[in-house]
Length: 271
Image (tube, rainbow, N blue to C red; front, side):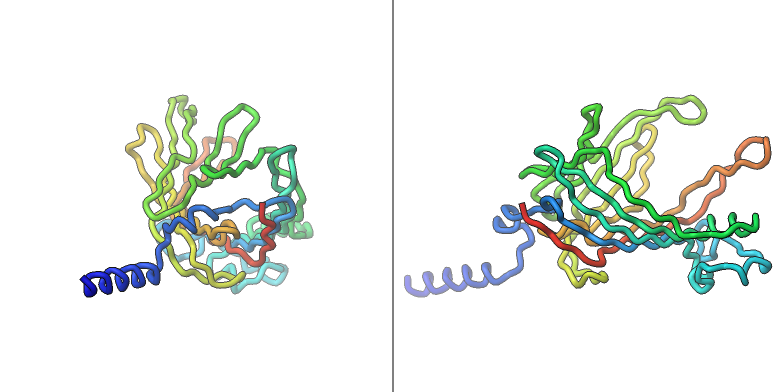
């Protein structure tokens, strides 16, 4: 009998020492939005390559190289857009809104300006999103004026948690009615390194379904940490661009578009 009791105690001690990402403590203390004056600073880098390759899509004319302020070493890597942004949580009655302050440096825009002998300045903006942000024990979502919801997170997060973020119907360019549905699934919990530090984050795979919901494209991954929020967003996939040529019909061009948005600093104000 004494041996059985000792074995049971040993099992309990080992179980308590093992990391468990879905423990009740984690589930009870998951908060991702933050309260008024929560602030997060992000850095976003975008790459644009020829489809299915690492060849930069944007070609810079030799005549414009001497005038270019955008770092040519970055453009040679396929980087075309650099964005620094600060997001601040503001009160809105019983809920919240986001104020965004950003500075954007875009290679395409700079080349277009230089080709017309115009000066280029990085774009700066400050705006407040009109949508309302709400977080409770079950969800964190955006509430729109028409009553629809964009469910960012289904809580509590744990490996295997799934939800539909949004779904709607729309009419495409050919006048055909199509469906869209975005689904999320927590696929892992990983240690990741970003400029704000090292975090053990829930990794969410975002899947987009178009048309009859049989067409599927997985290209987005989001990483969330309780009491901090989103620490990393990654996207990499072939997309298309519609380019107008003169007065004729537009041309569809496929490119590889890659994005990395990482947390640089944060000040999380608890609810």
